[in-house]
Length: 150
Image (cartoon, rainbow, N blue to C red):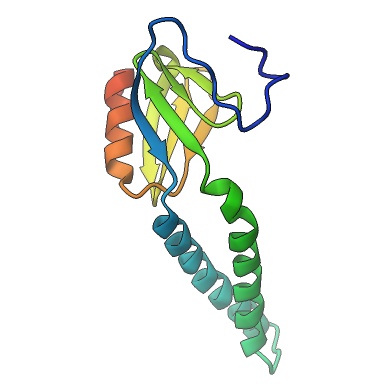
C-alpha cells in the first residue's frame, strides 16, 4: 500500500492483491439537501428563540441569520461532501482519503438520521454521511464485520 501521508486526500485507498469490492456507498444529493433544510429550520428557530429570550424586538432576524448560516454551509460544503465514497471490500472498509478500516477492527455500527457511525476497537469513529438508505448501509457493514447493529 502507498504511504497515506503522501497520497492526496481524495485518492482512494488501493486494494490489496485478490481483494474485491462488495459494496460502494456514496452520499445522496437529495438526502444532503433535506438534512440541510432540517438544520436550517432548527437554526432559524434557535436564532429566534435566543433573540426573544434577550428581549430583542426584531426576533425575525434570528430566522434570517439561521437560514443564511446553514445555506452558506450547505453550498460551501456540497462540492466536497457529495463526492465522498466508501467501499466495503471482503476485508476492509475504505473511505475517503487515507481511511482504511479492517473489518476485524470494527466493534460497533450505529445509525442515526441519514448517517452511519463505524466505531473501531481502538475507539476511532468514522461517519458515513448523507446516505439515501442508511439502514441498508448499516446492515451491510455490520454483517460484513460480524457485529450487531446498534
